Image (cartoon, rainbow, N blue to C red; front, side, top):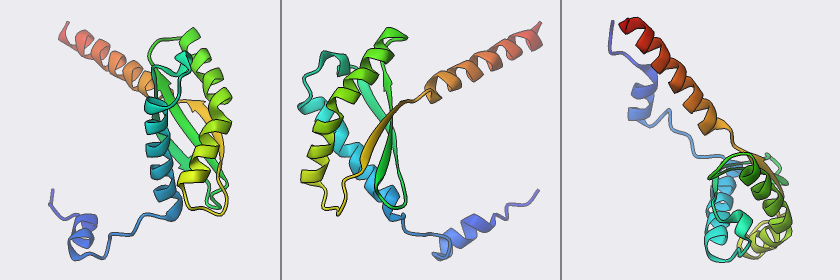
Length: 134
């Protein structure tokens, strides 16, 4: 097996690196702004344990899918979703004031199940490892 990796070679030459596309940069800024807003300004107790995990912005910058997690299960997830929907206008107006964009993206909130799925896969791997030891 060789150590030849074309991606590493291109990156070392500077040819493989591309600047982040604008929607990805805007998504980063939106996640940072809304995270700070959740910590500092939002007073809703339903949003106390909410963390924003990622933001995806459409190419035309008109829509932002915001993924979040929350401490707890079931009811906490539902309450956080309702709290985010209630705060959507406040958050969007804050983004309009702080971002210098022609259009402020419409915000859509989704519960991020990635962490739960990773935990489930790790549990399965532990079970397989335990069976192999027998």
